[in-house]
Amino acid sequence: MKRRIMDFLSALGRSLMMPIAALAACGIVLGLTAALLKPQVIEVLPFLANGGVSYIITMLNKVSGVVFTLIPVLFAISIAFGMAKEDKEIAAFAGFIGYYTFLVSSSVMISSGIMDFSAMKISAILGVETVDMGAVAGILIGVVVAALHNRFHKIVFPVAIAFYGGKRFVSIIVILVAALLGQVMPIVWEPVSMGINALGTAIGEAGAFGVFIFGFLERLLIPTGLHHVLNGVFRTTAVGGIYEGVEGCLNIFLQFFDKVPIETMRPFTQFLGQGKMPFMMFGLPAAALAIYKTSPQEKKARVKALLLAGVAACVISGITEPVEFAFMFIAPPLFLFHAVMGGISFMLMSVLGVIVGNTGGGVIDFFIWGVLQPGSNWYWIVIVGLFYMPIYYFTFKWYLTRKSLSIDVEEEEVVEGEYLKGEEKALGDPIGLMVIEGLGGYENIKTVNNCISRLRVDVVDMSKVDEKLLRKTGSAGIIKPSETHIQVVYGPKVEKVANAVKSAMAVR
Image (cartoon, rainbow, N blue to C red; front, side, top):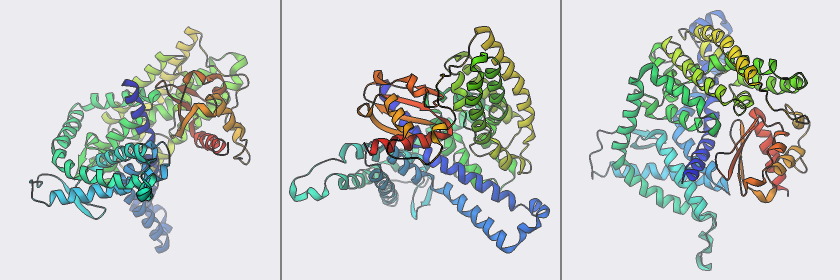
């Protein structure tokens, strides 16, 4: 049971990464365009007031902002797609059909007069007046659609009705089940929403301690990949706060940051990227330097190449796994220290009144959402970060020296994208074939997916996996959340690795 729960949560977290990545990119565009439309910026850069330039900036601002109103349907589609084992495009199609059917069915229920729904929030969603369940509805439908798809996408009917079998039956059964859920959920949603709101209120009332716990768990869950689930809950549901009927700290921030005084956003940005910036831009680079300094002389060149790539990803885009996995398994106490420092970082940013939103913790978000936004108090990030650098450096150096530890870098390891240079070839791609061999061969691989930094693979027999060979492909770390699921950490280059593996498997 525990393994199945972990597998489910891992798959859910992976599936949420598609819309979350899109939201992060749109958030950057939204923040940049909002900054360029501010009178203070236009005064310094008069060309921004030009009709054509102003029109383009305004258009990009509106287009990037509207994406955040589509989070529930994006979740429904992406979860159905991500958790489907085969024929994912069919599941994604059914995800949209299921979500819209759910909206219409619940609309019929609330207008029926069977019960009094006046106390509940009613909104127009995709043109349908219904109970607003936010991202929870999208997650629910996505999970249900994926389960129905995996169960029925190969069903066979008698010849007379064979046309409706297989893939075509998925949408049919999804419509029926979604219609039923649409009748039930408005009735049960009120107590459910009250529970979610109570949790959000409790976290808010916990003050700085609640923020610390969030930041601590956000780092501590990195090895399992469940930090995506934690972040998703806070960013898109009432657990992360409610403002003017909008739920979720990320939703609230991106919909209101340029419409209300920036101080109003402070309770919501405390769960966003600002808490990561001191350790992402300052702490982890210092830790990487300590790891390099304490490495044996014969390993320094290879360690340097590995860590430079990891630090670049961490500082620029906020992808921390390549650095974290360098010490996570050789020195677990250091990772616990890092998680505690993560919690303290989130807490300090909240206490010091920093108001820097969006999801990333790198310099891009720091500049757009901090430096360019008047009243964000971004300078505290730099001040705290400058304290974090020596704390991380000397703590790591002391522990690694005391324990005589150094990261394990294979002599023949393929480093920093070496195998990805030049035109990728679908047939015989060396990295794809090497990863497949490391995973135990074609027959041992059930499904291959990836998130923002990890190759996520379901295997038949974990004993056939060759971890040493996988490390030689440039992996920064390997995690085995269950007996049949493995995660291979590659950092920002994971998309290319995943494509190479899928291409090699497709032409087998």
